[in-house]
Image 1 (cartoon, rainbow, N blue to C red):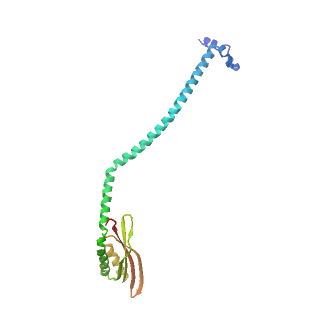
Image 2 (image 1 turned 135 degrees about the vertical axis):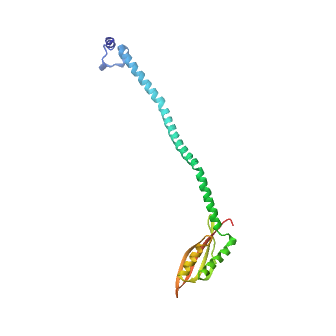
Length: 199
């Protein structure tokens, strides 16, 4: 059989390859050439046919990975939904509690009276207590109150402590303490309270 294979290539010189004389090539060379051409055609066909499909497949794989990440994020949110609802309810309850601490427009005169009483109870001499122009914000209205008084450092400390104990939200700003002798001070403080915009 080896002799038959050798005979099928007999008379073929690869150094003098002439494609125009391919019909006269020995049968073994023709078979090898046909096999190589067949393999080349199949390879090129498969390559061109599948290259578009491979790009589509890669796009689909990336889309699948993206969807899996989105699914994981959404499923994580769903798993935490009960906790988030409880958190939301807690925040709403805290917000309601804070709103209850904001005076209504009807309660502002009573708040001014409370501030005056705290000042007097602290030993301060209240010169004046005047409501300044309101400042509107998105969620509330700020009501500045300018307080002018006379007293000692200790009395100012008692006043600040008393204001901190009010059930309404009142913050103190712009302290100005000027000594006037005998351990007394002229005091100006801006107290700010806040009320709902829906009053």
